[in-house]
Image 1: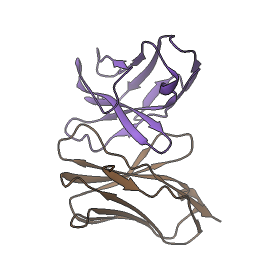
Image 2: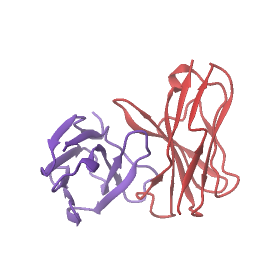
Image 3: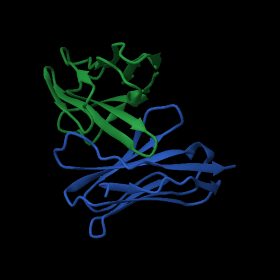
Image 4: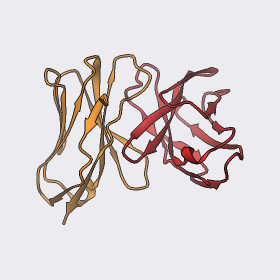
Length: 111
Length: 113
């Protein structure tokens, strides 16, 4: 079993839709939960991260972590065509030297 | 502007011909890392460096070497490339103590025939 599981999609939604992207994980030691966005032919860019459980909001993006169920979510409100990208979850324990990436979910927002 | 630069961006080579992919950062960050990205497998760490002259293996180090002689540079060396090293490679940087917050370069697409 992989430490981080992520549905690869692809996911297509109309502009303005609310998007929900999810990951599950198995390692109870994970404390930091990152979301990266990767546009085609580009490197991943850090979108946002949360520490431990709870929610964090940044503009149209909300990251949510439920440690009891080992479930990570990223919500995008009022999705835009510019949000079309691959989204990667990447949890990690405190003090770790690497990130444990999911395989990414490819999102397309249709105008 | 904070940057991670990689060179070359694209490379096609033949089996066994030694190559080096350079990585350079301008933020004076202590931590640097190399990942490879393959379809269905995601990003996997090859090597990382916590500081000058301090390097360690990641999850998939076989067939790769690195060096960290100065803080800004972290080259990835393939002494004898093989076709299974055909992949998309990313270098990343991070400030000390914040390795959860990594910033990636633009990637190097390597094809080994």
